[in-house]
View 1 (cartoon, chains in turn green, blue):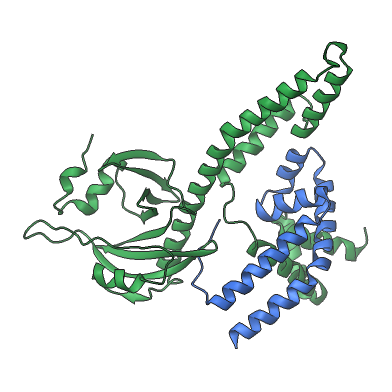
View 2 (view 1 turned 180 degrees about the vertical axis):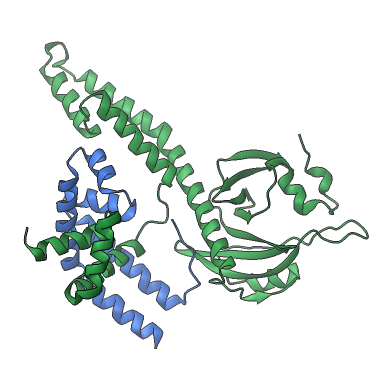
Length: 292
Length: 93
């Protein structure tokens, strides 16, 4: 390999996060002094950015990808790995060779039917998991961006009615913030701060921000056609199923109602069963959030 | 991860949709072996070793297929690059 090839090779490894330790340090040092490599890196980066911008809305979560790779590794250690379509083709060939099945390839048909049924059973569930994980990830990244000051609010208001009116026509769904029903002489546990519109996939979602003492709470709202609430610990209350999970140090609660999917992100450290009471503690409906 | 971006205006939104379509068409036109490695690397962000395990081939093969697939994409997307850069300039002005 000549020097030019070696540098091209390292540029690909660098962009794909495959360089480690000393190799990474050496390449960074080289990059600082080599205008050709810097220019080639920029070209490669531009292509990578273009491809990344075109990624589909729903992708398998990191957990699901890890499970797929782990399953594949089990397969490798057990026997020679074979792709699914290769396996089906092999079975088809076997059935053609067997004289008892020459008239009609029953085994092949049965295999294909079995694979089809497996697909029908598992694919919708996997897709649902992926959609839900994607929405949670989006809610988390949106919350982080807001905390970092990268997503400034477009309206600052403590009034749910004012924010509801502001969202009219800005998001492709009918979104109304409920007016809190406080008990007499009680102060709300949280305050609404404001809101903004954010992009979600090929459409828009509503982001509403709340403050509770020094904590910030984000509520991301999207159409249930594109966002799913699923997984985590399930808490059923008021006829709704709330999905509670902790991820990257944040608490995330998702639920779907009236064609909208909500994701509430906070740093409040409490159990799933008490999480709703944190905000509803001084409200008239607090009795509806039971602790087990 | 799907990152929620700041809201775009309708023209920028349209340009980005056209760009996505061009990229996906270019990927569809790749030979199957190249398409597999591009999707697993660029869309699923798997490492070379993970891709090699899934495709049952050496990591070196993954790397050479990726390089050739990217070269093909670069050629077929040169028009898309020009269009999107042009559109972005217009949007910014």
